[in-house]
Image 1 (tube, rainbow, N blue to C red):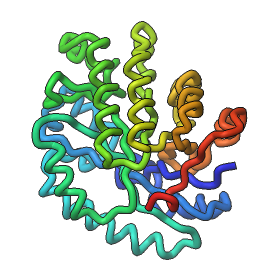
Image 2: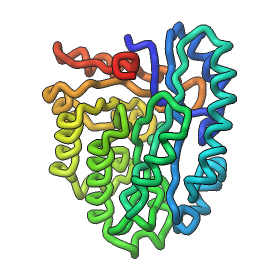
Image 3: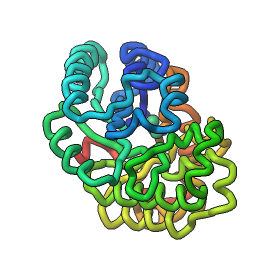
Length: 282
Ligand SMILES: [Zn+2]
Ligand SMILES: [Zn+2]
């Protein structure tokens, strides 16, 4: 059984528990390592998003940033605290971030400059937004159903297509060690009408070509009763020998290691599954 998670959140972003509480629970589970990956979301027009008010009502408003230069001291101060606290626990603690990747002109350059000055151990990419064509306007996928204005902006089919294309670009950017919840957009039930098979297979292809790992997320079990990604994609990932890891995407202590036994069963069905470990790539 996998005894670590590299995709976890604390109350620094939208988790319920402190870093101390999460680490204590990881130790109690007998884990020898953990990666903490709070959200890193920086988009120049985030405050103009039509879902912004809903976003800040369910998470700390200061987890959403519009300015790279202002965000840098905020994150580095967090890192300083993080390193001090994590030293006090008897397990290896990695400082990671779950990054939303955007494709508007200039984002990549600013992000590169930012990340070069940011204290961190690894980055994963988890994409939570729909965008307009040039990615300058964003919509939080988890607020899609609640926000009527969203649906007049563009069709769900177009939003989904761009979303999956953005994820493929994130994978190809070379910035990330692994991809989170590949088809998290399945939490919108109408997604079923637009299977996006080619788009999701393109992501698998990009993972293989760019040697990026992929998570099997048990968060899907909590949200929609199925893993992210869905089974036919998991089987393709295994076939293509993409390094895989199980993630709980824990937002509270009780979610650490959530349903890992179920995910292990899926992975153990295939004899040659390649498993991902951070220490192999850092
Ligand atoms: Zn996520
Ligand atoms: Zn997450």
